[in-house]
Image (cartoon, rainbow, N blue to C red; front, top):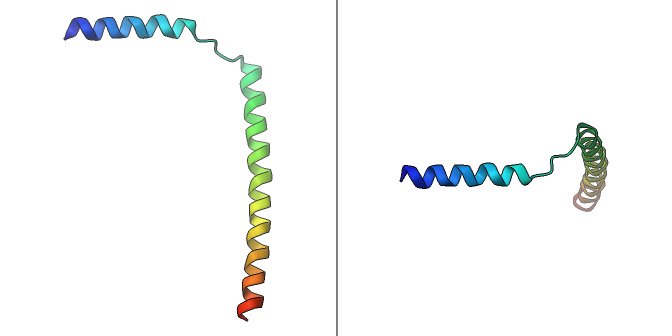
Length: 61
């Protein structure tokens, strides 16, 4: 059992060496894009929510 765990961990180490990690600049740029897109979508959904609420109040009121 211990031998299988050791083998697994050594294979994990080999695979992690193959990973290409993004640079700091790439990570910051990607984070910025995610924040901007998330903000735009949240404003859009908030606007749609307000419109639909007004519509429901108009129909039911």
